[in-house]
Image 1: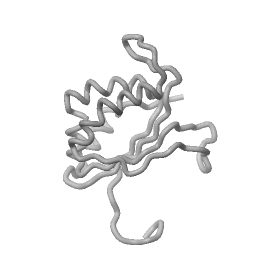
Image 2: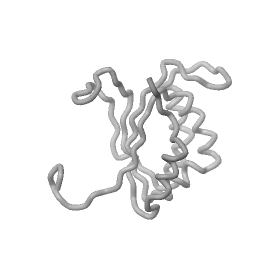
Image 3: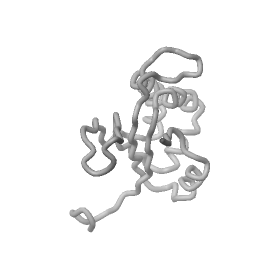
Length: 139
């Protein structure tokens, strides 16, 4: 099974090629390790390591104008592989894609991300742009 924690270079380059001056929402889907995998061997659960990531990266996220729009605990996979499980799903909003890039290149963020890498077994991170108008699913 293939797991995803960090973006591949070509994915990050594709992100950077999209407009940077518009608001974006990032859909985050996370599966935590039972036991975090820190390089220094410290003992923590994946959930505890992710909480440390949140504490350390949160001020940077706020400084660039980020906001959590929604978060929840997945309960059942209604459509999709029944063996796929997520521990946390949330939508993070940024005023611009440049704000997201500012966050992930901040020196303090780069230190905090070690907690995310130790915590996460598998993840999906999807950049989304806003669609205006319409009240239905497809209009």
